[in-house]
Length: 124
Image (cartoon, rainbow, N blue to C red; front, side):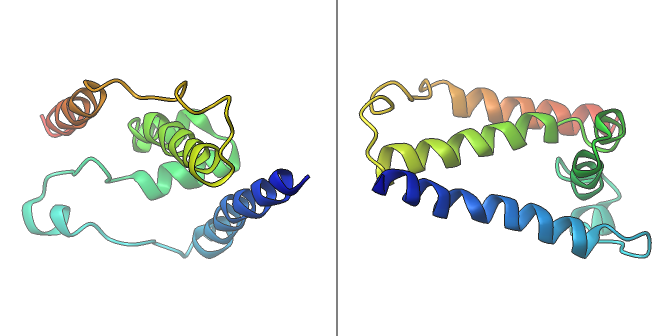
């Protein structure tokens, strides 16, 4: 029972952050944060459009989110997977997950390559 309470307490912030983001940046007059890379160079960075894409996902509009930033559809599930894995392995010490949730050694290299290719392709 104690493990379920720990899980609930550690998963609640995800919903709180999502709710806060929707309330704080969900209005039409909210412009969000501006991108320094875009302001200085005129090039779209990998995160440009990410706030609008996240807002679209929170409203349930997946196609609009892809239009703003398609990379967010890869990164949000990846970040959720890592967060849940860290909780299960290091906090709860769930024996089912220990040893089973391991990203391959090549994964970070492929992820960086995907981000670089995405950045180049959106600026061509």
